[in-house]
Amino acid sequence: MTFQEYLDYFEQILASPEDYDPYGDEEYLNYTKLNWSRMNRWLKRFEPNDAVKSLIASITEPQHWIVITEPWCGDAAHSVAQLYQIVKNNPNIDFEIQLRDKEPFLIEDYLTNGSKSIPKLIIRNDVGHDKFIWGPRPQPLQDIYMQMKAEGKAFAEINEVIQKWYNEDKGEVLQRELLTQLS
Image 1 (cartoon, helix red, strand yellow):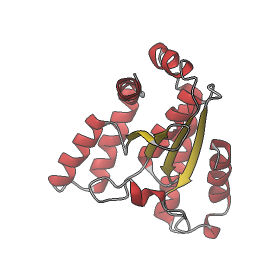
Image 2 (image 1 turned 60 degrees about the vertical axis):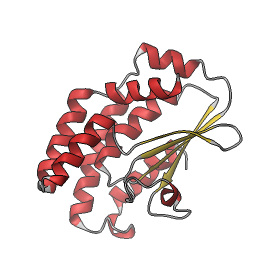
Image 3 (image 1 turned 90 degrees about the vertical axis):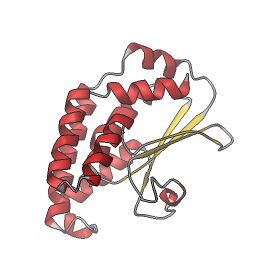
Image 4 (image 1 turned 180 degrees about the vertical axis):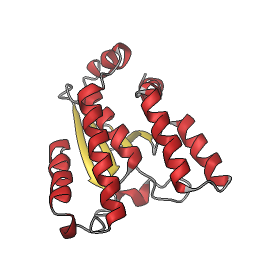
């Protein structure tokens, strides 16, 4: 789906959560409402830095950027909006959203340590070969997450640290990682 179709899907879930599994579950719905707010905040406030703007503007060969995500995913609320803001003005970049939990289950080919962690960005060239794979979160945050998980920290505590990190980082590490890989 396009990014706009993803936003429409997100809004449909919020309007009729009982029609979309697992959003009838109050916990999932609450995360999704929070993610809607976070994503919209990034769509309004996030501006790619000059180096990333320049790099993206220099892409003249067709590329296909696929993001595997779901509206309930807290990490996606930050990164997917930032990724969209980064590429939206380059007509050579086809930006597609695929849902993790719906066919064709592309996530099966892009597991993280054996898990279906999202969001996942796959950048392909014009003939469909993978050029770069990123995700599910910026590497320094992934390291923090893995450490806290290994220490047996509670989900709520991990989630709080993750959200704080995203708010303080403001998309800078994601942009640096893209610059490194795409330069």
